[in-house]
Image (cartoon, rainbow, N blue to C red):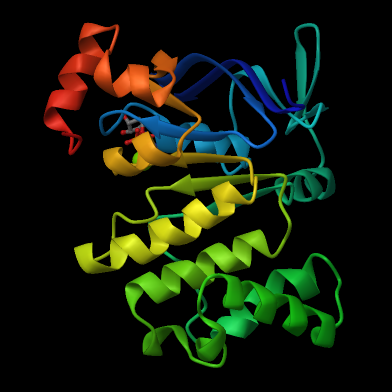
Length: 256
Ligand SMILES: Nc1ncnc2c1ncn2[C@@H]1O[C@H](COP(=O)(O)OP(=O)(O)O)[C@@H](O)[C@H]1O
Ligand SMILES: [Mg+2]
């Protein structure tokens, strides 16, 4: 068994009266590739956003590399860490979203360099070298000086992934990164994620690409109404679901 990277215990999140995460427990070991599946509204995005501290949460705890994320919890007393500490912890995870969120007035390389210079305090020359290395890794060496508007959706998403990975996160979070892409561009992005998985990057990915989840995941988590309803080896999950809910979900999904 590898080293535990992520340990989530009893995670609870509410929006007003609406409890969206109702006690999620999840452990992730170094090098695991975990796909999170489940119908719209089941809490997948919210879970990733809590891990990356883009959302506050009301109960439970999240530890990354043994460090408690976001809050000091001492018995019943829970205090949010200071913003500087939160910023440092946030940099331990990288996140890529359905929307690429690239800065339109910066080239691909400049988009990747930004965090390296601003957060990691690298010199521009060093940051450019790192950016070029990662753009090469995602197959965009020849596009380093192009602006987002000059790139296809698949290329923009690969820049966004390079930007996140260049920060050397301990854990990568992918939230439906192919959902906004034309079908013919999905494959090139999934190929990049496959390459990162093969390199041993630890990742949690929310996806509707069931065939992809089946092929690359070491484990699959099925979320339903704010809890993990079933989890396991992809072969068992997709071929022999244990719960009626998962069986129903798979009938309506793209896996067949
Ligand atoms: N900012 C928000 N304010 C209020 N409710 C929200 C907000 N974001 C998400 N929700 C609700 O939380 C639930 C889970 O959403 P989400 O995590 O986005 O699900 P998923 O990613 O699985 O589709 C949904 O019922 C959604 O409407
Ligand atoms: Mg979502």
